Every structure is written in C-alpha cells, then in structure tokens.
Image (cartoon, rainbow, N blue to C red; front, side, top):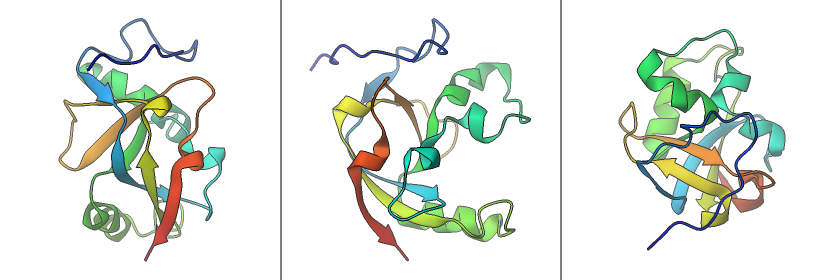
Length: 133
C-alpha cells in the first residue's frame, strides 16, 4: 500500500525521511514528563539532546522522535538511566500510532527502538492510550 502524502517540517533535510519507512501504525511506548503527555513530550531527538552528535550514518534519526517497541524495553531504559536528569522521573505512555502521524524507520539503529518522523501539524499526544507502570 503506498504511503499517503505527508507534509514534512521545513527543518528536515532532503534525505529525511529516508526511503526505508512505513506509515506509523500499532502501539509504541514513549518516556514522557506528563500524563497525559503534551506536545512537549514528543520533541525530535536533536531538540531533546542538542549536545549529542550522532554518527554520520545515523544523522537522519536526529529528526525522529524515539519510542520503544515493548514495555520491557522502555522500563530497561529507565533502569539503565535512573538519574532525575536522565529518565528516572519519566513516565511511560502507551501511544497508538496512526498513519497520519508520519512514518517510522524500518532500519532501526537499536533493537526495540522506533524512530518516528512526524509530519507537520500532527503530534503523538493525540494518540495517547494510557500510562504504563
């Protein structure tokens, strides 16, 4: 099935999103500050971590929003990075992806990691299902 026509943010480089994508669909988990989450909880990686430089072959992911494919993976990130300035105070939100949000990369850099490239005017906060504990 062909992808719908998306309206990408002007800050995206010409090669983002790349060709190896599918329309967003299914459930994913996001570490957020608030329940229910707001648009501030869904910043692209380069906004969340402006001082962290990704390797050249992964620069496209800097324009994505990070999610986790399983609840266990999201909990593991909280466990591995427990400080308050890391993920220790974050909550886990279950998000039901809709294709209108954008696309996800099918060549993820890490297992259980999902990069969502959001289209202009759409936010995953609108697809919030529930908080996971």
